[in-house]
Every structure is written in C-alpha cells, then in structure tokens.
Length: 163
Image (cartoon, rainbow, N blue to C red):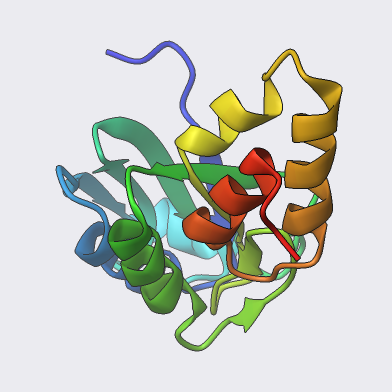
C-alpha cells in the first residue's frame, strides 16, 4: 500500500478522466468507486449515486480522483512525469495524452482535463547528469527547442552532432 497517493480534484469528470488514464498506461486499473449517498449528495449538490471518488492505479502507482466541483482547477505547478523507454513508447503516450489536450514545450503537455504531464525518455536523466558540462549544455539547448522530445536528436546533441 502506498503511503502517499496523488489526489486529483475534478469538477465532474473524474470517472471519464480515470477511464481515459487507465486506457493509456499498462498495469492500470480502477480499484474502487465510491458513489454519493443521499447525505453526501445533499451536502455537495451532486446527484445521489453519482461518482464521488475513484481509487485507481496507473502503472502500479495509486491515485484518487474526486468529483469535487468547480472550485479548483489544475495548473502547471503540479505535473506527472512519465519516463519512457524508447521513442515509440514516448510517441504513443504523447499522442494519447494530447488527444483533446494541448502540446506545451520541452516534453510538457496538458491533457483534455487540464492535467499537466511531462513525457520524457528515461535516458534524458543520464544525459543531464553527464559530468561534461558541454554535453549537458548541448542536450539542454536541444531540449529547449523541442515540444515533443526526440530521443535521437537529444543523443546527437549529447555527442556534439546536433545542428
């Protein structure tokens, strides 16, 4: 059992969002759905038996989603990092998460629900920890020009072959 679980506040789209996310990531599932009782529906203004919270997993990471109403909106102050093994996985996840959302920059995007994600290759961490500051500088310069990250281009930059 996770000790810390991200808690995502949606207006009324928690169930739609959770189904969307669990369709994208492997090893994902909906664990439990709690529906409004008469008492909680009265207090929240939500319909009786409508979804209140959903416990779910994305690639084994536990989350909770709530239909909490319009009081709070997502912003870039919190994002989820998805580390991809190769360009194919990166492209696939990027394509699915941006469907109905928007591409931002440097591997960042906002999905259709306004949640921010960073879709990055796992190898990027290694490139940015290289002891050679010239290499890390070239990688960072290449990264800053990208929207969706291109692993081959980042590797070329690391090797000094980017143009």
